[in-house]
Amino acid sequence: MSITGVCGENRYVGGIDNYLEFIMTPECEITVNPIDSFQSNVRMEWTMDEFYSNGGQTSFADRVSGVLGIHASRIKVVSVYTGSVVVDFNVEADPALAASGTPEEVSSAVAA
Image (cartoon, rainbow, N blue to C red; front, side, top):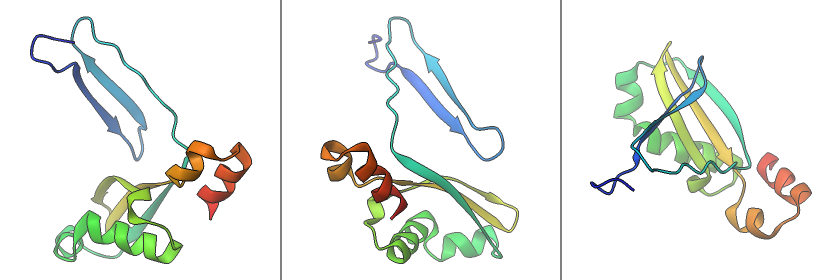
């Protein structure tokens, strides 16, 4: 841990490039844990102003979770960019099932 109590920064560059960048301070340790999820994106015929005036990322996650019949906390918006409006997002497995379920149960829960 650094003197300031912060070990550095990270950022994910998704969309086209898809890489994770770490900026570390000395003597910091990074742990990367895989998450059972699938990635998706949606292109909408909206402007960015329309997207954000209609609730932005929060409303998007609420609507997608409602359609899928899952809790909104499982929808992680990764990026929002122009091209009309493109939203990259992940749908994560149910955390309770991921902690106790078999790999087959987790895989089917992510797809559900």
